[in-house]
Length: 196
Image 1 (cartoon, rainbow, N blue to C red):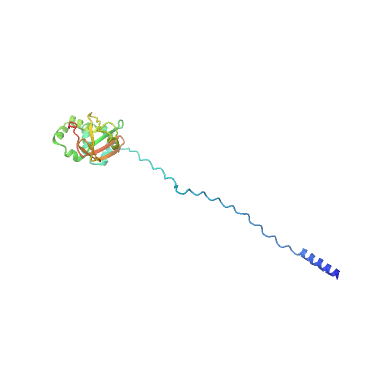
Image 2 (tube, one colour):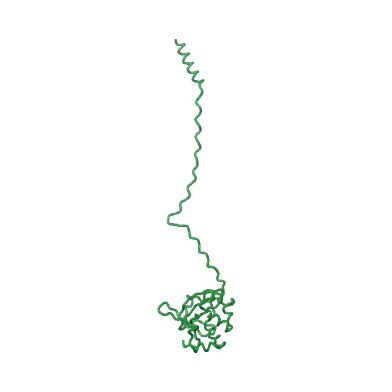
């Protein structure tokens, strides 16, 4: 019996060895590398705003700019009549025009109107409305008087904290920019012979 038990044990072991081995376990998949998270923007810091585009360059001269603006037709005609058109269209020297409205030309005092009927006198009156440099309103307000092409200064005065006067004329529109200068619109024609 010993032999049979030993033989049975050997037979069982042999059978177990002959049986198919279980299939190998599938290989574990390689770990997937996750992409590193993008660094978060610090709180409170927004993307910088794009820089503003520069203002388009002014290409129209004073004549074209004032024509487009409107209300200064009589001044423009007077400048041409007096032979001073180069101040409207020239590019060599920047100027500032102190421009009376059409209504100001219509309301001009009789004595000044009579003077302006003579071309030579008209030219004097108009040269008193021309400053030989480009001056925006901020620059104008830094002066008590503006030099003119004629020679005498135009008195500058601020009243009531906000009203600007060129002599006795009230400023109506300021800082009309052109390629060859600047214009400011006033409500009276300036008289170079008027008492300051």
